[in-house]
Length: 114
Image 1: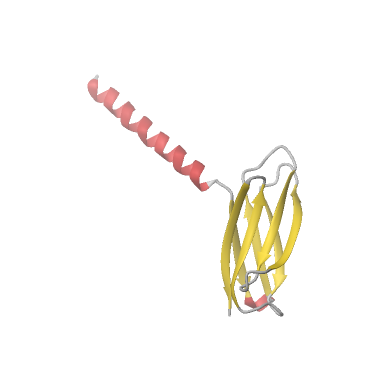
Image 2: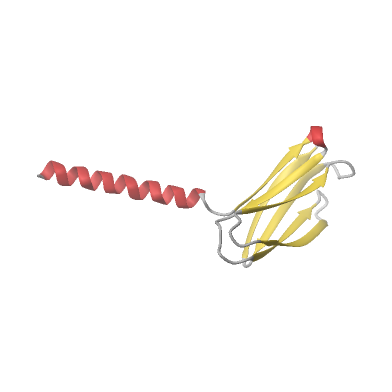
């Protein structure tokens, strides 16, 4: 009987740990991808799906610290991501910052143009 209770306790602990790890992985995140062959920078904001529309602000900050572009975008209800893109040509070389403002939360990532 003790072995069965011990096995149930271990299994429950393992399942709770897995659920916590899944919750951390499904948090909102901003990420960018550089596609040189397509002359594009694609930045994506992923979040948990919501039953309501949500407005976020995308901010592109150049290597000089200046805002290159800022735009408000709406994530339709039921969607889990939204993206913005720019062409590589004409961009200043260096480390760029892509920020997403979602209510009080700010998510950012950096990428380098060479």
